[in-house]
Image (cartoon, rainbow, N blue to C red):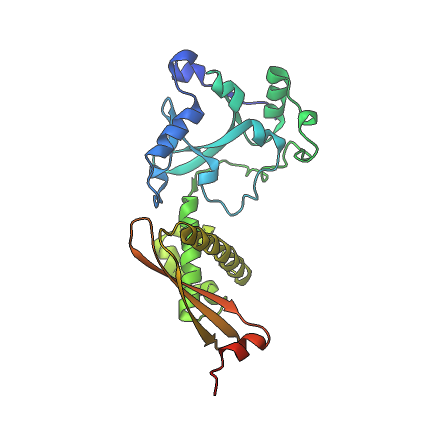
Amino acid sequence: MEAQQLSLTSLLGTPGRRKSLKQQLDAASIHVESGRTTLAELPAVRTGCKKYILEEYIANKNRKGRRSWIRAHGFFLTEVSPDLQTFQTYWVCSRCDEQGKSSMFVASNTTSPIEHLRKSHMISQMDQSSGDAVEDHPCADIPHPSKRRCLEPSTARSNVNKAKELTVGWIVTANLPFTAPSNPYLRRVLELHDTSLAKEVPWSRHSVRETMRKLFEVKKRAISSQLEKAVTRISFSFDMWTSPNRYALLGLHAHYLDASYHLQSRLLLSVVYGGPILEITKPKR
């Protein structure tokens, strides 16, 4: 495929008078509050009349992730239309961008970026450490393009993550099977609300189970961090619980004051195996 390159110097003026694309993205990120969910509010850069968003911010369950070694020397931007539809994705060389003479290469394959790194910066795959080197192929990162390029409806990746977390919360609190989200009637209701979001969220039983496992690890780390930042001693109360599936659980109820001196409570549950601890909790006669 013929290399396609867009010079940013002509679009953004002289190199010494403009911020690099990376600096523009970092500056935009400062003003983005947590919880923002629309593409219009995500950090973006403009070149002329075109708008670009970091590819990683846009959800696409069909994209398996980029494995090429060129990721270490640049970043990927996706062009977004005024009505927030996605166009082509480009690779930007970080070294050129820092020097104010950035170039964008169409990311349909890795041939052009690899040639650019080799000729302009004397960087090749052989320069990468053996642990980071990945076998490269011109079309390894991108699925085969369709015969006709068209606009694609998109949603922010944060929307997908929130939907997955809310789905797990719904299943846990309502005691539903993992297959509940794949109900076709529920899917139709969700599609009426947001078609692009319903398309991007994986609803299979395996996906729900995997999301629950990841959320458990994330929440466990968050609670550990909160307990470490307590400004007072942490008081614990103990109790034995039994679950519907007949597991014995040791309930630890933690009480403490946070950095704002607000009372906080956290419930920690641990499955109890064996009998020694049960003997300890038995009242003496």
